[in-house]
Length: 359
Ligand code: AMP
Ligand code: MG
Image (cartoon, rainbow, N blue to C red; front, side, top):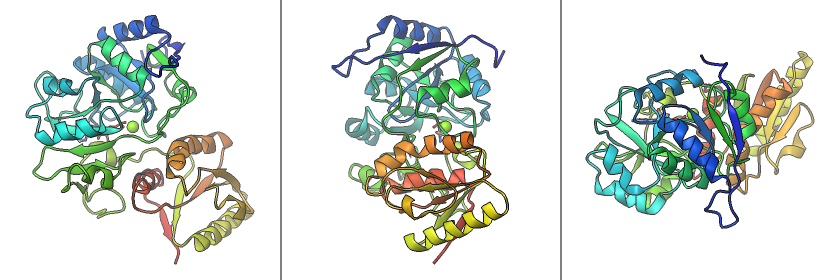
């Protein structure tokens, strides 16, 4: 039953060669759990994943139950060799091989038409399947030890920010999975970019660490799904998961957009108003701006000049606000290009589209 099973927590260390794993026996044990239909949470380079055997319907059902995730929200199947695509998808277009060659292993998920081997439980009933080959050595070793196909959404309770370290996974999933592999903090901190290759024109369904510009180097005609926040919000997003409120802290979050000086002034005014009302106000600021805030509980998300640092800290900051017990959060915005596109997408979703524009 959910919430009362015994969860084994195992620390995993990567050898200094960056490839091998010190605790091979524990990886084999974790692989065995997956083969038998159990659940193992594990680190990937993007965020921690909640893994189950992608080819077993009951394992996918357990994933949905453990996360409290709506079952129409499909799972990403993780593989450890490019060619494994051919075992679960057909046709595999030439563009998929080109993307794999360039970006795998790495933070890219490719949507293809699925073969019958993949049960509908794994794909939320869709006839397509999402496939990614992660680069994290623990993820790769686990996939190989498990038979090669691991369905793994982010290892958080549905709706909460994705976990970027094992402590957050333990908070959310202890008692709900068989094993948690703890390898500390992940490197990227934002989920993979999802690109759909099942239509004539390739479409990015979820912005991620790999930017539109980077994908265009391989697929010049790739476009952004208009349903993604920031573009035409009237269209529903094509990745089922993108329609839910998501990545959200407990307190309501409001994104304030506009020129930097005006944004800071507005957030200061809103914080003063909130505090006058007796509320505890959280402010999500950056290294460049944090000193301009005189009120509220200010967390620094990273450096604007280094957007990768913002990506890495985003979810952890949102979870910190939960712990600090703030009543509302105001966040600065980020440029709608490059990696900023994915950061904005996650913040907008965390804000449930509550955006204030100042000009
Ligand atoms: P997560 O693993 O928690 O990052 O969520 C996986 C994301 O991939 C969700 O937004 C899903 O809706 C999306 N996804 C997975 N499979 C498909 C698919 N076959 N077609 C479209 N989107 C998908
Ligand atoms: Mg997720």
